[in-house]
Length: 216
Image 1 (cartoon, rainbow, N blue to C red):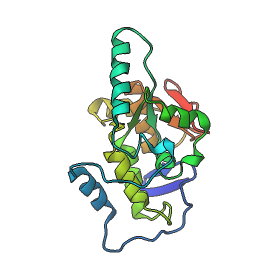
Image 2: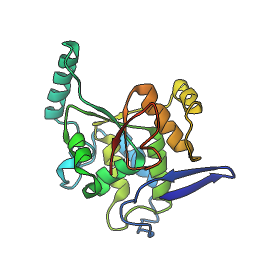
Image 3: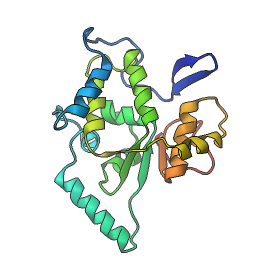
Image 4: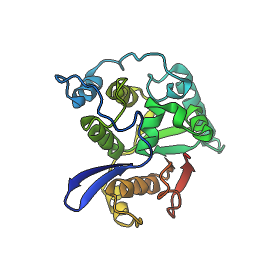
């Protein structure tokens, strides 16, 4: 668990073991982590990435023709009344595992991610937590963690779970046994958009009124 202090009575916590441990990693002193996101969002296409395990295919690579075909097929089945795939909201540590250290994912989660019938959703809260972790050099030291994060966001498979006024109001109704505003917003997001939260955080596995896919 990583605890990030943000105010006198407020903190953010990222549950689960982070990829690469907690040691400070090498970083180009002339490159600010946010530059990678800005460049990825301005580029004509997603930057090319090194060959990755299959689990990364939907998270860090551009949306393929195969994925588009399955997505259109899914929409047709929904119109015909067939059961759709899962709509999964990734907790921050699960997202980081998937793009940096996929071997940490349990089989049911990696299989769910590989299934093109399922939708993968991400909250801006998780992006913000990843930004803070990169700035504090709390991610892996031997590879380009920020490049993988940027590629994942630009890849086309992730749906943005937008933070709206309704989500904020739902967060006020979330009661957790711990004081972590990020977790409250993730639970509220899952409830409002009717998503299944994928998490290994033991404190979230038994939260009422939200669907959970355990990542442990």
